[in-house]
Length: 332
Image (cartoon, rainbow, N blue to C red; front, side, top):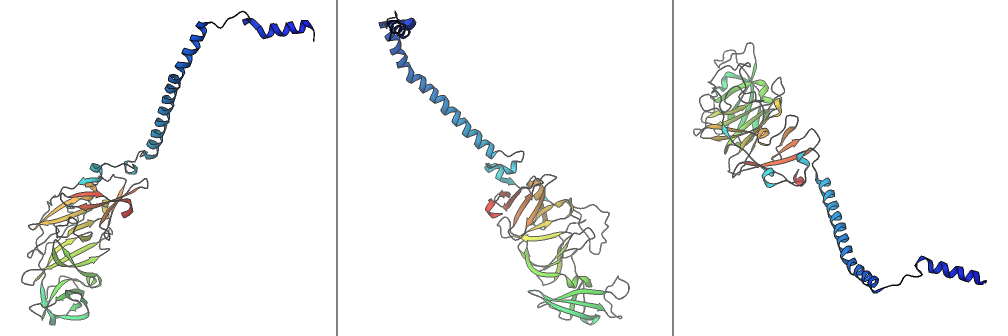
């Protein structure tokens, strides 16, 4: 290798700093930089950790966000899960015995087709009795725990009240242990003989329930409740132009009536107090929107809200104080 080549390499290695000296000042500068490095990385780590935490929070919010439907939110406060129910006296006209009901009369509550107070007494709920020898018996069947249902026509010489022309058939009944065995209760037209009969309890008292699932031209049901007085006489206790269910919702030992209408998708709860009906609207108490629907599950005793978006919530009624309580999803 030539001397020129060695000289060139030495010049490249020395570069522009051949004459620079690593002074004490330069050493002190480097040491200070090294001492500052841990604090720098600590600050960088804290920033990184903050970003990670914010990211986790953002994901949780995104997963639990209700997307415009509060019913789908995961977190529900106790105030939202319990909704108060206020009962008020039913303001309805009292029907007189034998009075004719006009369909043009206003309904007593929205969606409920009754025109008069459905709760009656021994006077306006009176059921006439006729002699057994006034009828031509067509058929009979037992009513468990109550008596016997009778299907019959009236004999031509019968003096029993009859405002129907021709020779119509009728429905009546005899009661177990009644004081006058030669008499029967003359109740309605013959179609009622084929309806559903069952003994149940309403407002803390035993009653006979007669149900017709499709009773009216608008598709509504009809329900009659019959009750014995202290002397054993039977009278109509309550009559409803809608489906009705009995359940002790508030746990006070007295069964409320849960009224379910087809019209306007209404559900009413009736209580009885000193011979007067108190009512509350489940639809209003649960704040069901106009486009959503409400149903009553008479098996579980729950009230279900079906939203137009496809969601479903269930509530149960509780007393002390009266309120709707949101049910666990496993109970739906």
